[in-house]
Image (cartoon, rainbow, N blue to C red; front, side, top):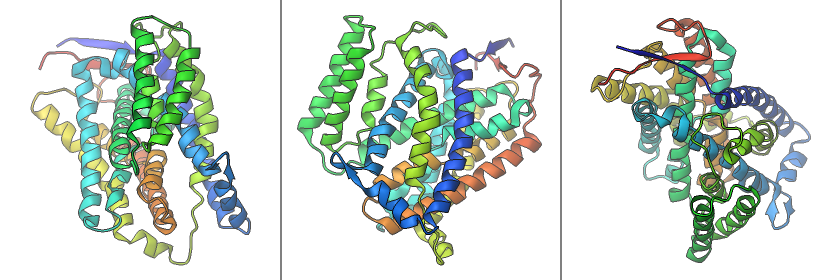
Length: 403
């Protein structure tokens, strides 16, 4: 058995720091939104987000416009993982891939089982996603009490999780499809790929201008416009050399970290967590849809992530990093139950026009996410010590022996 000690890349460390800080700010914004919504200013506050400018409400500008930039960052992070991150080594990538599959399938199955054949069946995608900012924020609080490889595992898991959520949004939450506009958007995407691959264009201007046009055409097509952000990410020139500061993709990802963490996601939280907590709040949490969300996030996530990971390791498909054990994997599964950003995002798509169901769903998401984060923190605080020597928090050990 040989052991390889790997340093966390500068890009990953910067990403981790921004996600940690973003998680704290998101909590503050969510609490502020809840307080204002349920105060005498509630009607004016909610009315502001529904006011129209340029043909779209402020809420739509946030969810369709600003969040496209968030999805662009997600796409850049996924690209980095594929080129020189955890997903660049196929053997190492298999563990978070199987974990993500379980963390997506089991929560969706729980929600579908409870809501099959009802008007709320469309909400099965809500408990599938993991909020990277909040999940990594919990790990950041734990610091050196958890192994560095757990941070990388959870990050890779959450990024793959988001990829599945993006696919679900593109396939299942498209209302009216215009093939003409969609074809135009995809044509722009292909042109940008040609600029990158064959003409070796590294200037950012044509990609960003093309991205704006692709976003507009995607918006008009009926496919959610944020998908354009993900597609744009994969057209940006990328260097396979780790921490290549001259890479356009590296520069853009580095530039977007703080605006997304400290502006876009907080604005999203303010726009989408205006939840009215009425006298019947308990009843709202006991409906089939809310139960599907709560049990999907609180039970489906840890069970699905742990179970599929265990199956993959048992059959020799992949191995656990040396400093991890199954208590760590289960703890990561608990933190995977923090849905928040992506879960709220999918809620708005699943129940468009049904304000009461959206309100109840968001309440269930907040309850489940808060509970999952608290339990996950306590679990890892008690059982999160590294299995093997891990004195350097910025390093990790892998068993690289062939299966």
